[in-house]
Amino acid sequence: MKKKNNSGLSKEIKKTHMRQLAKYREETLRPNPELRSLFLEITPFCNEHCLHCGSRCGDIDVSNMLSVDEIKETLLQVKKDFDSSKMRLCITGGEPLLRPEFFEIMEFAQNLGFTWGMTSNGTLIDKETARRLRKAGLRTVSISVDGLKENHEWFRQSPGCYEKTIEGIKNLIEVGISHVQITTVIYHKNIDELDKMYEEFKKVGVRSWRVINIEPIGRAKENADLMLSKEEYLRLFEFIRDKRFEDKMEVTYGCSHYLGVETEREVRKWYFLCNAGVYTASIMYNGDIGGCLDIERRPELIQGNVRTDNLKEVWENKFVNFRNDFRKTGKCADCKDYEFCAGDSFHTWNFDTMEPNLCLKGILFK
Image 1 (tube, rainbow, N blue to C red):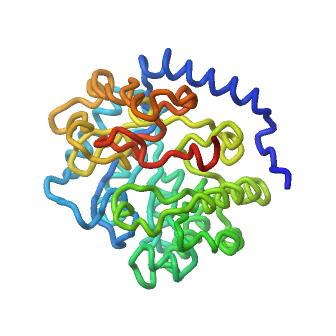
Image 2 (cartoon, rainbow, N blue to C red):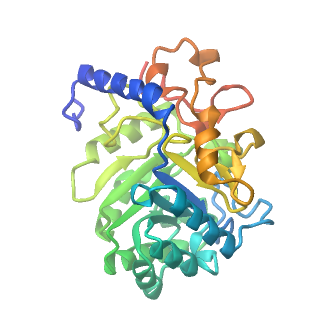
């Protein structure tokens, strides 16, 4: 069967585009990074205990959490130092709505002029909460649904959560949140539900379904039986390619991983570029400053702390490891695709063995 060409681009045109992007990365972006997405982890607490959680929510030291006043002071400083009209504030956790002062924080951010979105498990979004979220300025939201009822609740270790999550999504749509997305982690146990999930999520009424593979990070590293086989990866990407524009609900892959020339632009609207440290920074619940929140929280990757350091100064003078080619080593050193992937996603890089924990070369492409 001939594969769909969702991009309308030939391989040669895509290669030209990717070379242009690589040149831009090296000559413009790394020397002059632009903070476009600032992730703010307002709580490490969660009412679920997911088997794949990259942050290990519920199993970490939660002392030294930023106070409301410290968060407000940080937002004021960010507003002063950056052009907030060009920045998206991404609120996350844990489950953000478990922060007792959630609405106080977000109304403060709204009054400062920040555009903000959030990730959530959706279980706490009743009709009144949905209305309050819209009033507080919520623009975009990604709700996690990791399978149909049985698999979703098993994966999230939270009996009875599926109906609450679906109801939360419907409540958000009902109040007119501009962009409500379902995000689904595909793992060995739920991949057989792809077609059924597609039909169910269309009924819910979301505009976008973001489908991603389970990653070898956080708790998932202790659950190797959840990982996908080569055949399952191929099946996943063919599904996304086939369903991408089939209905009003777009099906798209996440931002992670270089997919090879044939698959790039066919399952998402952009070419791969790891944004960590060049477009994206994060403030963790304890004030630590890092790249992407999915990256392992190692001391050498923490760039500072908002309690003692100015984010703008950190952004301009730190993040060195995110802006050079220290990962061009081992099997990556002589790889012809390194020009395009630059070591692939930081969150799946193994800083002990200095090689990627997951590379789709040999799976999606040769």
